[in-house]
Length: 91
Image 1 (cartoon, rainbow, N blue to C red):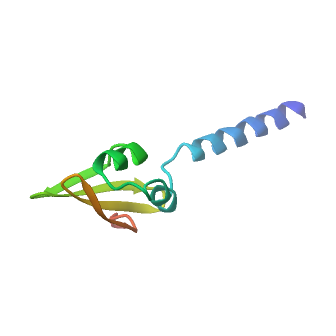
Image 2: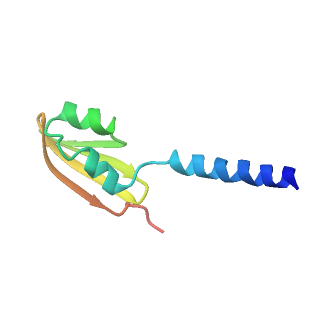
């Protein structure tokens, strides 16, 4: 009986730990980056983006979140716009 309980406890803790290791939610990411006004501050708050696309001086930084994605537009060194939405995955 104790071995079953121990196995259940280990399984539960493993699932909990793996769930906690996933990407943060959109809301968590936006809260972390709330005060980021520059490229360096944004990267310090969220790390390197999952995708970067450029059009002239404008860069679009995309971060994958557990419940979608968060996009920031940067012009030069300045963070100008932030947006959160669903992921671009097609079902």
